[in-house]
Image (cartoon, rainbow, N blue to C red):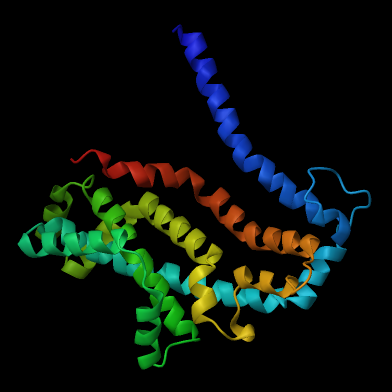
Length: 273
């Protein structure tokens, strides 16, 4: 196959895969500007009359989206901060020591990635700790859920940071605390950005965990506000789509700001120095 034909084939495949994302996204956006009757048809067409502000105003009024937004921001922001701190520090120790104990810890972390979350067992555990339907409980749960995969990513990234840096800092009299936070942590910018966006997207968009562990409407996250627009006999699809757009906007903004770091953060540990 000639280079031109090969490149054309890759471009066609890329366009087809992009269409799988772009078309549903446009469908959601277009239907968020329609009335309830037109949106119920789920047609890929322009609205006969654009409801640019009406649907979004109803979303904020009916679903109390402003409150849900702050709930999501508190839960997501706290989860991101905990994941960033715990994963970066523990991964540094695991990768630098690399002894029998830390290898056992890595095997345990791997099981945390492979094994699914048991809702019933977890709910009973949090219930015994009086953490059900609380921000603290779900923040700790999200942190524990993201901890294994993000820690593994940090371990891979630390493989690209030479141990000579550690030795030079220690010779200069730097303490263990200073070594990490003054020398190593500034080098983690790509990996930190990757951890932030990965955790942010996962927690912000989560529905399954939140629906079980946040059973109070006043504590609903944005992802759960879609419940307000589903009835027993009918659904307001125009408001559902508008709600989905509101939920997606913060994720898109975060990704646009951090996208240049993501690839480098994921691939930096591919070659061990």
